[in-house]
Amino acid sequence: MDRRDFLRTLVTRTGIGAGVALSGAAGYLGYHQPRREFYVDPFAIGGEDLPERLEIPEKAVVVGGGLAGMAAAMELARRNFEVTLLEASDDPGGKLTGWEVDALGERFPVEHGFHGYFDQYYNLNELFEAAGVGDVFTPAPGYPVKFRERPLEVFGQAPKLFPLNILSVVQQSDSLDMLPILMNFKGMLPVMDMFRYEYGKTFSRYDNIDFMTFCREQGVYDPFLATVLHPFSDATMNRMEVLSAAEALRYFHFYFFGSPEALGYRITKQDCMTALVTPVMRMLEDMGVNVVTGARVSRLVAEGDRVRGVVTGIAGGQEVMRVPYSSVREGEWYAATSPEGVPVLVTLRTGEYVAFDATCTHMGCPVHPVDGGGFFCPCHAGVFDSEGNVVEGPPETPLAKLDVTLSGDQLVLRRSVAGEGEKMLECDYCVLASNVRGTREIIGRSALGRPEFEQRIAALGEADPYIVWRLWLDAPVSSADYPFYTVSGYTYTDSVSIFSRFQEPFISWSARTGGSVVELHAYAIAPEDIRPEAEIREVMLEEMHRMFPETRTASVLYDVFMQQDNFTRWAPGDHGNRPETETPFRNLMLAGDWVKVDAPVFLMEAAVFTGRLAVNAISRQESLRSTPLPIVSMEGMFA
Ligand SMILES: Cc1cc2nc3c(=O)[nH]c(=O)nc-3n(C[C@H](O)[C@H](O)[C@H](O)COP(=O)(O)OP(=O)(O)OC[C@H]3O[C@@H](n4cnc5c(N)ncnc54)[C@H](O)[C@@H]3O)c2cc1C
Image (cartoon, rainbow, N blue to C red; front, side, top):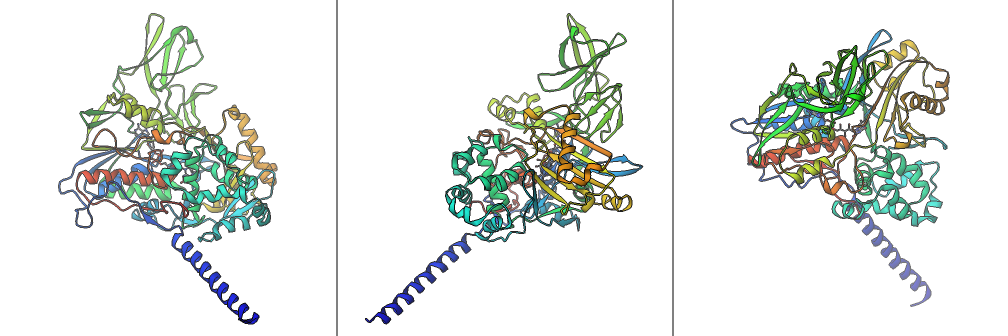
């Protein structure tokens, strides 16, 4: 073979080799791209030939009117159950709820907090489609991150294909350059590890450490941590330092590495109560669901391995707690919490003891006394007068007064005999879709005699408190190019939504007045940053001024400041102990974003997914067809 023949052969062979290698890699990547699939449901039985509906209706009670409860109620009604949905608050929707405020001579809707609706929320989208919510969404133009010390970065609109999606994150970022990344490829290996998400392995390896430690121990490339992982993981509303690394890996798998939908998300053109919750509630009522709001479930009644009924209200005369009478002084409120977690306020008024159950009747947050008499609920700005009557805000029912008697040196606080009393609703099935606190209280009061289950419920926790602060300003936020920003590096603020950019009636109000309406969120406030409200307001205002300097000269015309601590906690070590869909009671199922599932779902999608799964578990017992549950890829590409 002469030299020319040798070279020709070499080029041909290596060319073919490279071609084969490339097409092999392309084939592998093509085959392993994240895709929408169906959850392998442990409760699914049989197939198309099974009946979808009961012939003779059975009674089902759903506790909690958030997304999990709404999804469960819809699935049960579709199967011909006679469904009662009990919601403690006067308004349904849970964390999607909303109400109206009188401000500046007009009436405005306010919501629990801005929400983004991601394209891979397949189960949530099916719920909204079934309710015919219509054209209520606008696609968000990207995912901008405002850093304290660095210029804005805009992510989003990433290609759906790996590795283009990860490359596009780097390419879209001004502070992440390909060359240093390639030189620091070791620091990117743990990021590649995120493509290996696999429920069993990921949770057994990483649930016991926090995500910050995971990133440090794995040596994640610092700029990638600061620019991408930190700001995005803050959106779990659990701080990285106390967030389970396994939950964080599931979160990134669900929102990015395992999702075929890239970072596409939508926002609502109207407040979510009007756009989403009301149509879903209307659908439920059309399907025959009996929706009862203002119905706080106090306990379950069980017999053997079945729940017989659900009790609302609290028996009159029942002792709540005792407090030493010497600690209660004339004109001052004494605050205490009962062993069951009921907040109480007691005072001496012109020689007479007065006590309240300090649980806000709107969504169950503790109220606190304010100067000049009366009480304020920091969760949704409910105002009560000194007799506990509603003055302003979303609550509709007065605070519950407690009867006070003196026994030795103790004041005994009891449920008022004149109160509502207990009512029991019998049921064949019950889906407990209350939030973490509600579920803990209900199970805590039920004396079920199942210590392991009760311990698992008692161990559920909430994340650090968060703040949602809606402000009406007398000037536009003219430097804001986006409706929503994730924020990184500030003491409090984690996101900013410019409602006057994307939602009515704020767009029209802004056009008429030249003002703007902004919502600041502060997630998972670290214990060392918990300060009096006035100080937090001052710092957050300063943070807004720094982000949008033109707001420095703007006046706040009206505002609604809400601080609460009811967000689900995903701390290291929590997962293994979490309660699952099924319980020791054959006819009691659990649903909510806190329920243990092996599927890659999170937040709103987890709420709806678990609501549907709970009804699939019931369907199995009744030999009914189950609902197929769409999910993103169950495992990472390289798992
Ligand atoms: C500020 C904020 C922003 C968020 N942004 C997003 C986002 O952008 N994307 C996203 O996916 N998720 C987001 N979330 C999370 C999302 O709202 C929740 O994951 C989801 O709504 C939880 O639904 P759920 O049904 O599990 O619980 P909840 O919505 O908490 O519903 C539980 C219901 O049970 C009721 N209840 C409690 N106790 C009782 C009782 N004893 N009797 C009767 N009823 C009871 C409660 O009143 C409540 O209505 C956000 C949350 C907050 C707070």
